[in-house]
Image (cartoon, rainbow, N blue to C red; front, side, top):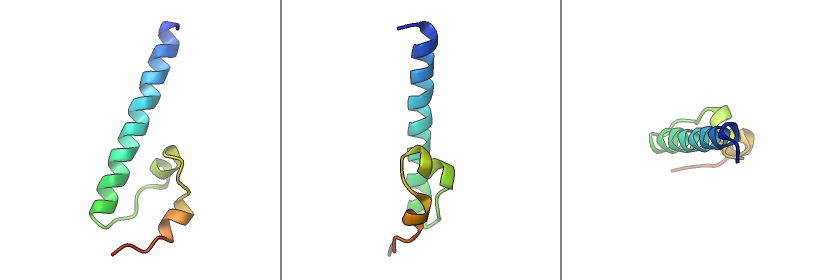
Length: 54
């Protein structure tokens, strides 16, 4: 594995982790997460917004 490839994989992993934290934080406080964070996690923002939470 090249150094650039390893850096790319680590960067992607941190990006996914950051999006997961942002989405969890937003939903916990009752806010709609940012669409780009949902897309990073493979979640459709339109479908996510149709979920009714208590």
